[in-house]
Image 1 (cartoon, rainbow, N blue to C red):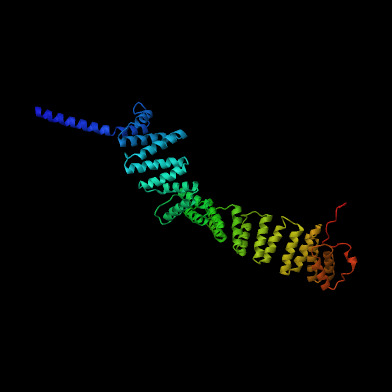
Image 2 (image 1 turned 90 degrees about the horizontal axis):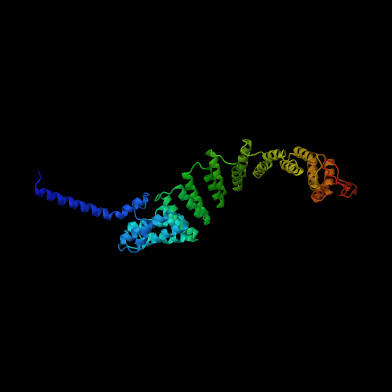
Length: 425
């Protein structure tokens, strides 16, 4: 059985524990209310917002006042309407204006306010708050720095924006920080819209490393090289895409051949274009065969150029195209093909605008084939219509033909006779 002294000792210990426990509850009462409210407890269990607002101005304890203001700010920040956002900002600023919160709590509170500013596009407020956060010795994360960079951009503070973009990207390259794909896209957005296309291309290369199978990302890099007047690098990117098996649209494949041609590599462009046509990776149409002809012709591969031009006749058999082909054969000194091509083109009536050229070329081919009489007839025809008169007369003089015989000029006749004029024309 316990003695009276034991009862006294037990009672003293119990009272000590009771008061100690009660003081802990009182010290944590506000914090508990915050947790209850954040967990959706009813207003009967915690003080209402209106009660807290009414009590706020009368609080004398700095910590209680600043903590309550921060609690109210968080409440209103969740409402997401203009009136509530304004109240949230007001209470955040009030909580930061006092000295009740520790510097670490102030840093955390400022980060919440910065997030609110940026979310609602209050960029000037964000910029000022960003400076204040650093005064509080806060260390901006890459995410905060990116928001600052964008805020400066929208505020038209170009120098600040681009300098921060350069710092962020340099830190990423040196592995001081690690940026996500979305972060790099924001930096690219800043560089590009501020006209720094060189750094845009560098950022895009880093983006590709995080998204290697994206056709869109590779194409964007190629276009940035074009923007930087580097068609060779743009073409290399597209060629690498082909090697990696990334599917390119026809327009991109054609862009690739044009870029290669623009770098002065007409032969490579022609070989690639020929391959694309042979493999049916681009359409067999007039534009593409004309492109192939141009590449081969500029590469001084006239035999292949002639084949491309021949193929184009399936899509356009106008006389001009036949005459262009005839001139290619003229360069090759293939007089028989030249002659046949002109006669094929002149099989149907031809427009007067092409008559002089057609007869001049026909005369040259007949002359080279030792058909002197036919050559003279063709040259006479060429002198009766503007366009190639001087060249035709020079050939006639060379052949010692009588150019004074006016009977020769009565009417154009023969293979390359022009269209008959319409009645009443």
